Image (cartoon, helix red, strand yellow):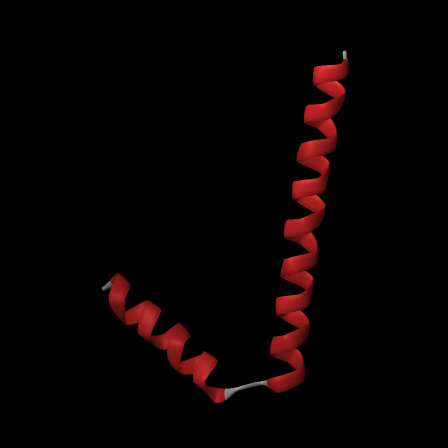
Length: 49
């Protein structure tokens, strides 16, 4: 049971960390709105083709 509880805490901690990173990145994009980001998205679309 100790191993299972440890794994659960590990996965929950990792999930929370990833979620907070995503929220911070989205917040930064809204704050700065750099036009370069649009160019990067267009480059990704071109690379797929």
